[in-house]
Length: 468
Image 1 (tube, helix red, strand yellow):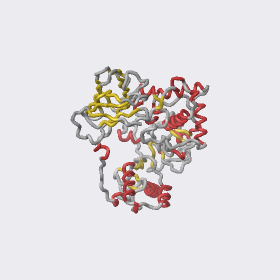
Image 2 (cartoon, one colour; image 1 turned 180 degrees about the vertical axis):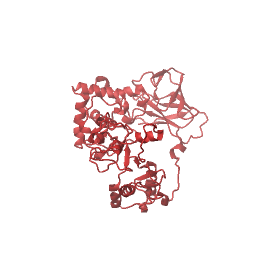
Image 3 (cartoon, one colour; image 1 turned 90 degrees about the horizontal axis):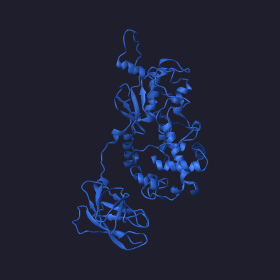
Image 4 (cartoon, rainbow, N blue to C red; image 1 turned 120 degrees about the vertical axis):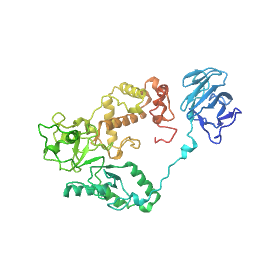
């Protein structure tokens, strides 16, 4: 196949002629990209896949700033730019992602997508920071952090397993959890993802600092901090009926969990016991790490109180503090779905509508299809590499997940339902569509309604670095 190329208009080249600042990407994969290396360039290439004859059909001029250019129609006929007809000698501004047809109609002509390349300096610009590994060590085990957590208000950092074990011992022996490094009373501790990235970079740079795998396994087995923990409630105060509580005192009461105030289900919180704040209702619950009911959603690692308070027979209407209902956090097997979640198919409503019509044409309901695919999922017959949840390999239908993660999982299964569906069940208008090169990873579908409608995006990408 002849490589497509552009020919210079003879204008003065730009300062970055050595590098292409943009390109025209043909939607027909048999043809090569047209690289645009000059600030003002006439495009001379094939305009029809059935002919190898070249034509001068447009001039592309780089605009000031990033991301746009002006296209001048130099062909003998009109051309299409983002579905708009540009007459002969006409001009239009184009942006990265604009679709161009070098003719008055889409049929019979090649189609191109205008793509602006990132600036050379932005492609390779990295900020290098020198860090002494001694400043990235846990003061308990004296090794480089592993699954680093940060204590507040002192902001000292430790391994998750080291601090979890320190916290368990402190709660058993003392009234407060003290920072192992400065002895400040710890009020809050949480995982620090920024420092985790730094820790990984340090270990890549100096592999001699790595600990044996068996040591890390022991450390992980002690780790109990999955999300932000609030440690140690303030001493309870008695309020006179004649004096209103202060704002600080009202906040303290609002953050108090039901088991701080009374024994419920045979359990009452320690005075300075660690608590989790529910992601949904913002209410508090005790961090009972050995309790049989999960406190965190496995899909997102966020804490939810619905299952815990349901196991303690505490309901929203009976509690004076925020409490979620059981419906907000329960096993996958106990859930049902009546509609296609809005996040399905990358929130492309055209694809959601097609999936709904396919299901209706089969004489089934969304619940029927999802139940079937959950069975395949539980039998590990589905590739989970692109599953948008944490701990993907550990999730089963008996796993507790929050409503948001359940919707993500349903959307993931409906993707597999669509890509394995035979064409006979597709509506005629959907079956005739061509696949988008970038498949589910296409960004144009989010801002170009026409592109989202006319191309199939429930497919594997054939361009770009995306898992299939």
